[in-house]
Image 1 (cartoon, rainbow, N blue to C red):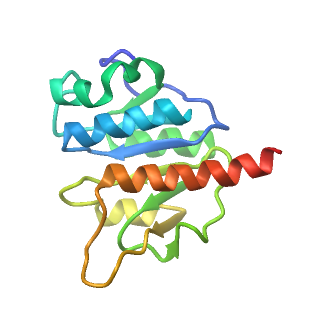
Image 2 (cartoon, rainbow, N blue to C red):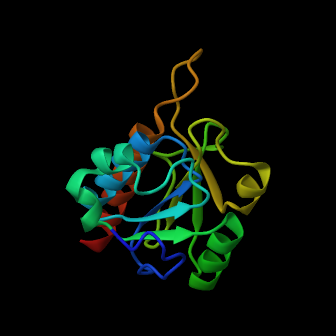
Amino acid sequence: MTDPDRLSSALPQGRLTLALYQPDIPQNAGTMMRACACLGVDAAIIEPAGFPVSDRHFRRSGMDYLDHVPIDRHASFAAFEGWRSKAGRRLVLLTTKGAVDYLDFVFQPGDVILVGRESAGVPDQVHEAADARIVIPVRPGLRSLNVAVAAAMVMGEALRQLGKEEK
């Protein structure tokens, strides 16, 4: 894992990145970081998080996998947007208010998949900044999946599509 005091470096441009907007449940954040490590996806955390990255629940969920994933930390959404704009990367927001089914969306190398806070999603300004808003359809009467499960599903589909293009 990167130095917890280092903020906003530059992750490789062509790789897929999973960004967590102000995560507030350390176990979910750790689980997503572990998935990133296993799948070869870079990670970004948009501060402030609802817990210190040294939190024992975060470290326990991520286990020793946290040392195998580049984690880029951004002090704010504005800092994240500055980095993303400069890098020319597309922002794909995973949201229950999405307009496009994630299975119908065409992912591109370098996409940044953004998930919101478990407790509140993301504010309107983040929705407006997104280049695309995708959704995982769920059965009527049910709200949503756990954010870590949803992130893993979307990363898997993005990697499946991108792997097809590379062959």
